[in-house]
Amino acid sequence: MATWFITGCSTGFGRALAQQVLAAGHTAVITARNVEAVTDLAEEYPDTAVALALDVTDDQQIATTVETARERLGDIDVLVNNAGYGYRSAVEEGEDEVIRPMFETNYFGAVKLINAVLPSMRARRAGMIINLSSIAGQVSPAGMGYYAATKAALEATSEALMREVRSLGIRVSVVQPGPFRTDFAGRSLYQSQAPIDDYAETAGKIREENNSVDGTQAGDPVKAAQAIMNLAELDKPPLRLPLGQLATDLAQKDLQRQLDYLRKWEHLGRDTDFD
Image (cartoon, one colour):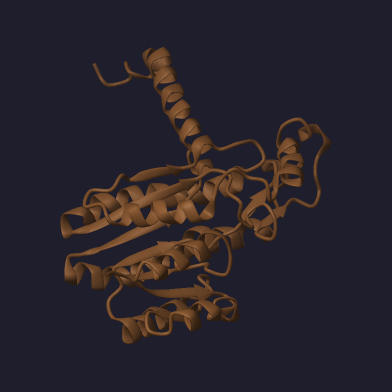
């Protein structure tokens, strides 16, 4: 059995994963900004669950929470960076007061937690880090450029980290969900407050989608949690794992599109070395 540390467990993926991990007999540190949202899970599994308050933008709270987790349950075997939220906006419509805090949560918060657990994992030559990205981190749709940028940054950092720590026995994977029936398109989503009419047929379309699909998405968070648990058991996990039919199809089409473009236009860039 492993000890998991999961962020953002109040709803959605985080809560579903915490429930599945605990039901499988693992121990887990389940965190949320409002710890009262997860105390019921700790009460259901009093011997294997610890509920702790954690705002991933608070450096001191990260350090304290990780230390408390070790004191209560021992070394962390699996870190899951799940805490985050979305933002829909054309690039020109972007609001700095939303964009910067989103980067602090979605990207910098995850990186700070990674750095908090790595010393122990390095000392033991064991551990796994799973970062929740999005298929938008690979395929950035109109109207989600800033959110996609937080996930693309996390994926790039994860790839470098994977290359840095795999020889130390530490595994790193990125999970790329498509649309799942979570609070992402509801409570956890912000939208620009001053839409520009010229973007109505591009970025504006994703606003219409948000108004119609919330609560009807195809993805099942419980099945996603089971897939993440299966991922954590692999000795050589993939760097990226799309979740859901749509995400998998988009990832495959994007990779093929990139290869087609590379082959079509490589003549423009290949012959730029010194003769």
